[in-house]
Structures are given as structure tokens and as C-alpha cells.
Image (cartoon, rainbow, N blue to C red; front, side, top):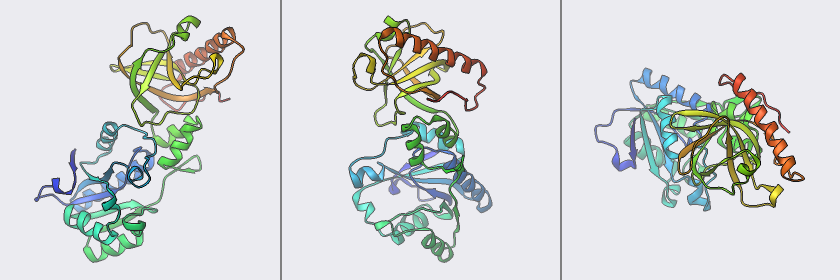
Length: 318
């Protein structure tokens, strides 16, 4: 997969494109369906499956803060490649770009720059100055400029429309069941293992404390069943996210007790992979009550590890 950063990086002899446009900040099932249409059109039009995206996230430039990311930039490119995209144009997003009229964006980037033979977007797609650009405008340009055009309806799962915003809300609420269905894969949180307070070891359940990559979305507080992935190995784990309120509320921590694992993980790059939520964060009467709850959490994770075959698990949710 070729990645071009900026319009000026495109070669002069660029092959024609079948393309879609957007942030694609999750590469969720709705994105995959859209890319599937791009792949089909690329075959019928004799064009290269292409994706146009922006960096940094437009909200960071326009509002000073981007929404938390669902995947790293590197992982996003991996997922796009796996979905069949052969070429990515990453446009630097600036305030000047936000002022470009949609008609000019179509001519400069899609028609002249990428030689579009087909453009496929979601039905709610908006672009250009004051978000004036929309599906009817693109359809009109398709007729006059001679490229195929298609607007794809948003995908749904469990009666809810799939979007990056909806997935963020679900993860923040600890609803991994719906979020993972919408993503089409377990939510992952990569980072580095760092030293923690050491309370888990005292309680008999030593935990690996994760420092997640900056800017990534951390699921809401609670205890989760999942895995820790390191060096190609996947280890069942009970993952806790919270402020350790039993010992007095502290900073948010993300830590995991790895089932049947011994070894030093400090400084290792790992991924925490989330299957489902076991329970809320709870203030216990003391260490003994917390130890009992942790034992119950581990039993649930063990049962899940034995019965799970990669499908979204059925787990108790408090």
C-alpha cells in the first residue's frame, strides 16, 4: 500500500482512482463495508482502490481538541491495507484547507490530483467550507466530470448505527459487547508496562500496569475479561480500569492480572485486548473483600478462556 502525504507527493503518472474520503479513525465494520464498495468499483472501473484522509484530525485544528483515537496511526494503516486499500492520500488538515470551497476541493483533489473514476462515500458525508459539500453536490459533479458515484447507507448492528462516535460512547460506558461488534474485532489498547503501586502483589494477584499510548480511548472504569498480547503470544487476563477507590481514589490506572503467567514485563510493549465487562469499579470494605472479588473475577476469566473461540463472549455485566 502506497501512502502519499500531501497533494504534491502524488506522482504525475498516477493511475486512476476509485476512492472514498473520511477520517476512518476506527476502521470499523461500517468503514469496511464502504471500502468493500470501493474495491468492487475499482475492479469494474479499472482503477486503484484509494482512500483520502486527513492529519491531524479536523476537530483538533477547528476546535483545539480531537476525540480520543480508537487505533494508532500505524494500526489504522494496517487495517486499511488488510481491507484492500492500495493507496492512501493523507492531506494535512489546516484552517486554510477548511476554507476551501467544496467545488474547488473536488476539482483539485479528486479530479485533477487522484484522477477519480469512482467516488464512494457515506450518505451523510459533508466536506468543504462551512460543510457545504454533500452527496447531491458530488452526484452532480460525477455527471459533469464523468466519474461513477455511490452513496452508501451507514451500517448497523444490534439496531444501532455504526459510527466512530457511537463506538466511543459504548467504550466509555464499558459496553464492550456492542463496541466489539461494531468494530468487528476486540478493542485493543497498546502501550508499555510500567511500575505500579504494587498492591496487587500484596493481595496475591500481581498486575501489569499499562501506560497507554497518548491520545487513545480508554474504556470506562470497571473490570474486564480479555487478554494481554506480547511478542505474538496472547495470555488470558482480568483487566482493571479505575482509581483504586478502596485505597483512596488515585489517578486512573489500567492494569491486568495475567492468568497462569510468570515473568518480568516491565518496559515491554504490549496490547490489552478487551472481550467484555465483568463488573463495575467498587469501593470494598477492605483488602480482604477486594481479594475475594479479584478471585471471583479470575474465575470468570478462566471460564471464558476455556469456552471462548474468538467470538464475542457472554459475560456478566453489573
